[in-house]
Image (cartoon, rainbow, N blue to C red; front, side, top):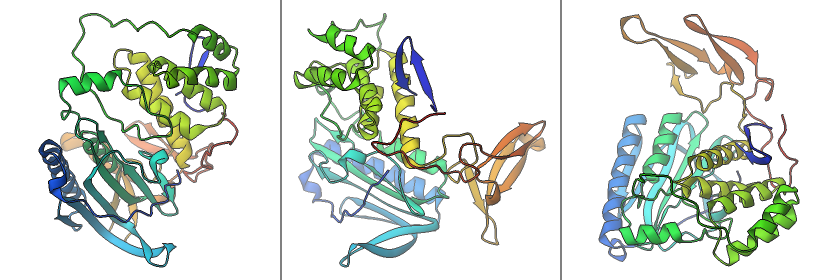
Length: 374
């Protein structure tokens, strides 16, 4: 299995967004000032990121809604009166704006997942401010040649929403609150915790936990999942229990649930760095497998920086060294799906990846599919 981590005898694992949302940002007066001010700052940072990466993109801000686009074409949508706009190669498309309440739209189960549809991918994010009862709606649609630095930068900027917006009281309540039922928007939000002089002991497990753990260790996944669900219902499930729930759902082949649960654990276990790191790797591995991207270490169109030459072809660039002796090595699109290995002062192509056969893509993992192997 790709990216598997084992802790003792317990196993832990180290997209179709059908975008059909047509909406306008509500009036700015509907929002409390802290949320509006923070959203304005985030929109400005994203606008600067777009201008830096796509200098020819059209960037507009109208009634609190940021919109940017470049090389966009119209395709047939789910209905004749709702056309679908997608960016072509070298293009980009996105919107960012505040919206009231928590996101409960049709794509709630697939938030924060790169969903590839043909030659473009959609990322939908909706971090929620519990203290201000608003969420930041962020949509990014990009072709396969979109730079990884831009996509990561977009994610990181959106993820800052409400990190500093909660009051101390709100943050403490958020830390104590049980996770929502899954699949839900787990928002990838960070929470503020005072540094501890010594490790914070885990609270005692709820009554009945030992019996549920016994089923879990016996790998009776369905029975264990049902037993753990009692703690969710009673609002006594901590990050460790949610990690065990995620592992149960993984073995029950409920991969989207598993991804959501591990994403929650990775953002709600600040005092257990081992658990936090493993959950983060598990969620990232599942996201990769569900997107259909090859999990191998081969060259992909999402890798690093691709530069378009005057003839319209794209070349992957690797910086070799720095200073006067530094130089840039390039590989054409013909090398996608191949293994690049550093040898002496340059990289060499060692042939097609044995996992994807040189395509850079594999069959996307879906709920019910056999467990990943390899």
